Amino acid sequence: MKISILGIGYVGLVTGVALSEVGHTVTCIDCDLEKINQLNRGISTIYEPGVPELLIKNMNQGRLYFTCDIREGLADNEIVYIAVGTPENNDGSANLQYVEQAARDIGANISRDTIIVTKSTVPIGTNARIKALINEHLVNRCTIEVVSNPEFLREGSALYDAFHADRIIIGAESEAAAEIVENINKPFKTTIFKTDLLSSELIKYASNAFLATKISYINEISNICELIGANVEDVSVGMGLDQRINSQFLKAGIGYGGSCFPKDIKALVHMTNSLNYQFELLESVMNVNCSRQQILLNKVKRRIGNLNKKKIALLGLAFKPNTDDMREAPSIMIAEILVAEGAVVTAYDPVAKENAEGVISRLVNYSDSVIEALTGADAALILTEWDEFKSLDLRILNEHMNEGILFDGRNCFSLEQADAANIEYHSIGRKSVIQDPVLS
Ligand code: UDX
Image 1 (tube, protein in one colour):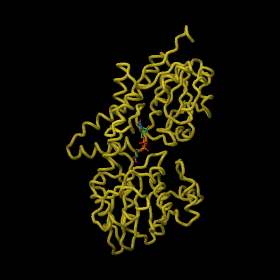
Image 2: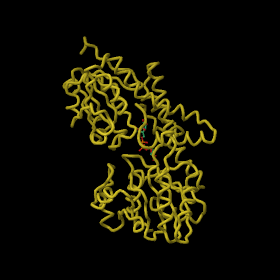
Image 3: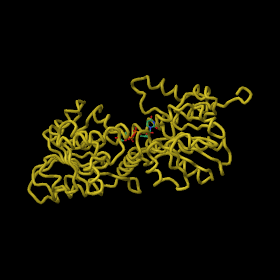
Image 4: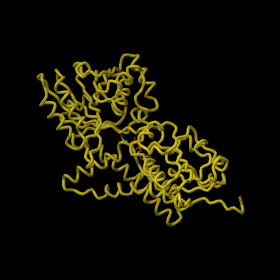
């Protein structure tokens, strides 16, 4: 099929690469000329494993194009995806300005019957609004149908998720439109579930909110583990062996960040409030998540005392591993508070430094390696569970730090590993490992 995609941010580019990889001819349209020029030079505009390689491959095979010209980009294609961003408004609602502009642009530039596929995460009822807006701006007589096809990619594993999705959701007004989008997705060889527009829109929000609920749930359980001396890692394993619970998204830590969970949960709460329904559970999920960074900082303050002039090393800044994305990263608040308390903060992240410099206090120093960050530090905090950190020989802490004291916000190590390395180790939902000076 010949497909156009409007909005080449994270979802748009991954979707374009994936669709062209399975044989479709895809024209990606974005108003950002610099972004389009970079992509036309075969350079990815996002940090995402696998995207650079497939980008060049499919461009070379003539299946993937990029343009700023919307009329050229739509070029009579009968399928148009909307993948523009839906950022958060100050009141927590989803900002639909880009979606609405895309709808107006499509209406003004199509000249044949077209199916509009909404990839963007949009509030309940938005697909109907998209259809109305397109029809209001049509300059040529043609029929349009909208189909909701929400995205479930995770940053850092987006292409894997695209080719190993558990399901593809299609919400449509007509069986004919649903079947066309179903045929587009058949090459992904996964379960395709068809439903109506509203249910499809809600599946996206409800799924993200549930995953975030699992995270806040295990984070609350980790608080209880600390009160009774249990081990949240073992509790998580024991729970996750029950297929009804499943082991995924049961990792305790310093909370969820990213461009989706925080935004989508606020949007869902805002949507339900407008229906005079109070989504109490999600209010709690958000409150628990907001407390996570302070919980780690309290551990640091209890152990280190006055942070003024203390050298603190931060290992990891991105909101999760395998991405350079700093949106809603827990590291932002932690770094700000440490700096505010007078600590001398040095941070290292394998890829997120450039993005971090734009959102974290300019008083934070940056290192180019773990060792450089640890050198002379009074304490180290792990904030992102990069493989590079999980494979560290913990003995280097005693070699390079003033004192080998590690606060692990992502439980990268077992208590046994910490004890064997003879370091002082504080983590989430587990007992601390304190070295006995007599024995060490
Ligand atoms: C999420 C959804 O997983 C994805 O389906 C949707 O399309 C977009 O939002 P993403 O935000 O990219 O994907 O990453 P994800 O792997 O879900 O992690 C989100 C946050 O939760 C990260 O900050 C991560 O550190 C945190 N997390 C995840 C936990 O704290 N514990 C876990 O067990 C899992």
